[in-house]
Amino acid sequence: MVLWIQEWIILSMLTILATGTLFVLWVIWPLLPGRLPVIVLPALNLEGVVSILMLLVIIAGFGKLLCSK
Image (cartoon, rainbow, N blue to C red; front, side, top):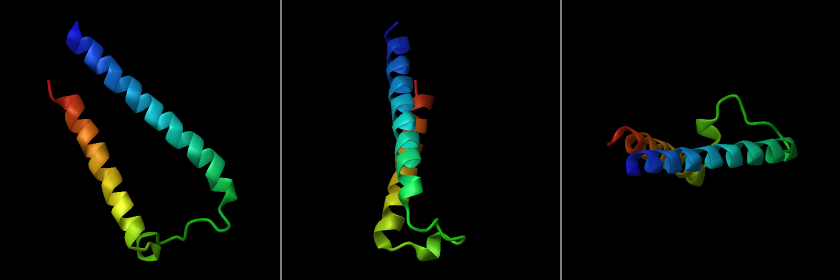
């Protein structure tokens, strides 16, 4: 029962995170003066690269958390 509750909480948090991300993209994307360039990585500065790497680490952490029992 506790395992089921833990999995439900994790899935709920991921759903809220995904919904918030979609909402932010939906609101922010039309406000950008120019769309992202075709080649994204060379156009990013150091902060952009670090933020993308942090996002990948967080996604991998959630995946590992969901797979561990």
